[in-house]
Length: 574
Image (cartoon, rainbow, N blue to C red):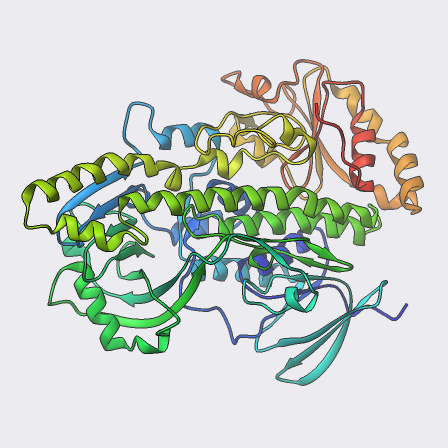
């Protein structure tokens, strides 16, 4: 085979493309990232960084930087409904309300809380980490013209500042977004809902503190007949976006010059005097679609190239980051000769059902928002609120106030963020039956689930169970379970060497660490052994992406589970 220029070429330097490069680099795999635009798009689109993504950022070393750029948590936990920003309040959701607040529940479930950080800032921190790591080359102003899969390698034709060139690679990751061309060129269709609408996104700078100071909020949904939409704080101070519906059949973003947009913002705020600096205007399509397959030969889809959701739930970018974490370690295992190419088929098998479920959740949120004035009924609801008949207006206010609390799963869906389970065990946790609650998360240590979080002490310092993990596999045992590690030596070497026809040396370091509860770490509150369900002589094996590969509930060994996983086999449900 012709020499390989780079083991992996990644199309797209958005959050998902950069995250894929970062994960590959953590496993020692070089990559080339190609981005058709000249740099990071300053127009912020996504902003929700959910709990699972913050856990990933913690592992990747950028959680502190993202948190520093995020909206103040006190502001990020409040959602308001108003007529205008300066006008009448209609309802609110506050994460910190009630004796058993959502924030308290989240604090028990993870070492990280969700954050609201503008996508361009998230992207910058990912780029900084990738460049500091030094394993990836990031090329801006570089368009991928053609991808030719030859079976044992892929030729990627690029057009960039240096002219046209061809890179030969082992695998390609298409992370070029919802409007990227790679998926269509591969002939991969999208399945899901029809287009439900189109939204205009106005990015602007303004001082809204006169209205936000007394009752700060992350999102303010505005219901009126002049300028309805949603106001989103990108930094909690001067950076904002305003989203409103528009009809691309009769207009386009070019029909919204700065002067018109500034007036739209003033109308939404409810003032005639406001200095508004319009920075950019974009648009997006309200739909929920998933690629029929995530793989075509040696080309794999990730992020919005593989799935598109309504923003109602904030799951788009977050799902893509989890795609990158799942795919990255698997590509590294295959490229390093530690796994069969069939392992890559498990990427779609695991991630696509999650995308379908996230699409369902996001679409239900979008539909439910109609009852609180967001959607096709906005005009009628706004008219009733403004009715000269006080009884009509008051009845509509009461109806909205009663409907707002029902929107909570839209904004507070912890189980949707961290409770998903890969593989056959999904059948036990909701697949094929009524959808599980999006909000009610119960930690579980079954294979396929994310390792539950608990605080433990290591060398006298508190750390999360997630901090015990690393780029490789991790074996966690009870105080008397150290014998499980023995099955990860000679039997593992023999079985994996046989399955992949590689030398024994390629398996060294696959399981990078063994953590013994009571010896390496202690659980001061006694919560960790119970959450992990391993007892004194049990154990569990955790994958590089933090999901459990094996649990000592049956007669199998971690070696047999690891062998099956790397062969691409799916184990039966527990």
